[in-house]
Amino acid sequence: MTEMSRLKALSHPLRLQILVLLDALSEARTSDLASQLGAAANKVSYHLSILEAGGFIGKRVGDDARETWWSVNEDKINPPQPDPAERESEDSRAASLAILEYLRSLVPDVTDEDKHQVVMLGVVFLTPDQRKEVASQMSEMYGRIRELSTKNHESGEGTLYALGAQLLPARPDQR
View (cartoon, rainbow, N blue to C red):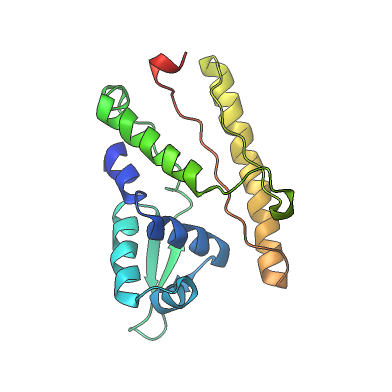
């Protein structure tokens, strides 16, 4: 699957909500997701199939063969390195920026301290070695956060937050 196809799989608000919820729950059935999201089960099922085709989630059959359990595919949630020709294409860059702008639009007033929000968006200049180091540090931090989340989820503590981090090549005109 191309990077463009994977980005398209994330282009719907309900699919993003499904990913956030599945990430928090670790595993859920379609009916559980539909109930928690307040959406029709057939609509959730449709969007689950698109996320599965994009490699973002996986499924397993439950003890009752009629049950399907969904979970985030941790190995594939981070996109593979794109083909350099594809990464340089104007369509790919436009799609990446459109999704980034959409994700930015989901963030409410970032100055509202009562909501405990932290948003860091910007353009940075890095060498290839620095980019690798930053990506590694981001992965380590995400692993620590996932451990905290798992402990809190198991103990019934904590509040559900959306967490996202991206390190993408910027457009040449952003220099």
